[in-house]
Image (cartoon, rainbow, N blue to C red; front, top):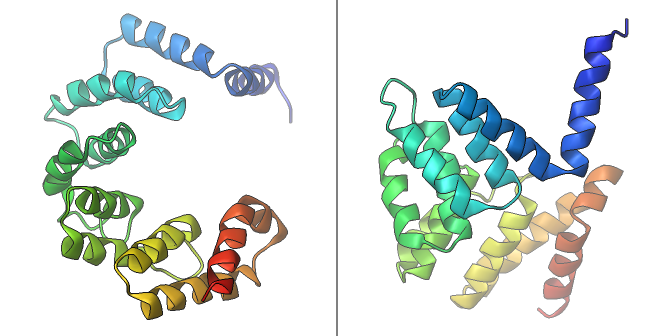
Length: 195
């Protein structure tokens, strides 16, 4: 059954896709109306979505001041924002607060932590964290970056193994996934051809 409320919701979602800053403006108004933890996090997420990391960070930091809430999600998002502005020291600092959380293991956040460690010169720790993302049938882009990291450390056999796995898995992808990861697959094939 189709009703007026559904039509309005669909219209709003289309508007936010076409004009992403409208979503931010709407969420800013919502936060002004009711300054709640969730409204602040929603606004920070919207900034993160449109890659305005410098606007997202203060909202995440303010949300963290609310000690009655679970911090994992907010810290994970904060790490993403800090990584994108290349503030590796802050990435490492905030990871220390969540690295014992079960959802941290084998996640994109752990991968970003590994990249941050690489950038500050802690290569052994970086490799240990980047290796965790090497999970079959997932994280294709991240696994390509991990293979490049291994190549930069002259670990050609390990890199080749990761690349061959990604290549083999790409042969079994659905058409939509092949479209999404087309660039990654082409780069994997190009690197493998150079071996």
